[in-house]
Length: 374
Image 1 (cartoon, rainbow, N blue to C red):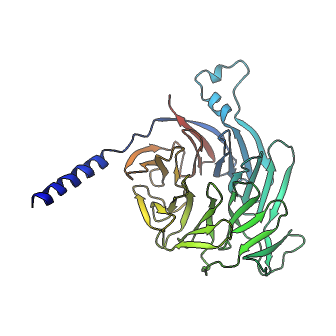
Image 2: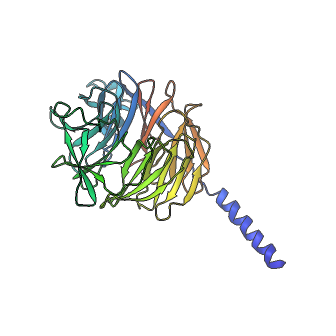
Image 3: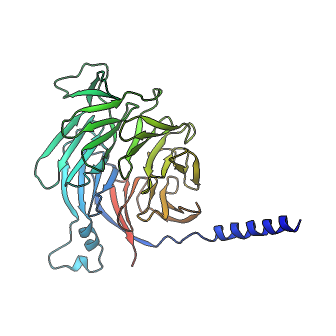
């Protein structure tokens, strides 16, 4: 009896300590950076955190230099003798339809963009010319290896095959920079060799229904795995070498779409979000649910859930209140809820990989930069 009472007391103390262990998310200041001519749909930081790019429904991509953004946010920036600081260093127009996703090459000054016009474009950031990279008009052929080869042709060369073009919903560079993943309306990720433009599909992919379009695809830090978040609500983990699906977490977000998925830096966990208004942390090795972050409603837009740069906090979007919601990653306790300062819903949140700063993109066409207040 005494032992059971003592155990109960220890558990109560542990629970109280856990409840009180949540950290405080530091205050951030925000600034309106720029506007697209239509909805700002996506954003991505470069691996070194020095640049951030945004894509829009107006088919344009804006490239910002983070150092100039910070300079613009200084109190005396408007009084500078050289005139106002302009953080937008380039604007690119090479797509015909809205931009869905972006990614920076891990070593070179190259940006890739995936669009509803069924293309992936490679943009050389220090050159005046934008080079069309891939057009997703593909037909399938057999291969003796573990991966099925896909011959990719341009629209002019091939337009009538039954495997017509696919909307490019998400893109992700392999950490080596030699390969590129594309998540499309097709349920299997497309893997590209960026030197030969050869495209591959897994020959041992699981059966996926017609609602298996990929909302997001992301490589792990070493490229040993990649993860997809699909419209059928499933999170799938893939081997980065064989391209085999090694684990499917069916119904990860119930019957609702899984809208984002990202690995932790140590590759042990995946953070996902879905249109069931949940953000979840999954163990890669077992596929088990580890944490669930509640208190943000997102049922309409393809919302993102992301870690901050230290992975101490999780950030996501609350659609009804148009607020940014922040949780303690360890305890899953909600620690902050801030107005987004967008007029109307904002649809994308991207955190810097190197510092306490993030970007939000809104249906009001605007782009806002957030950084920790000093």
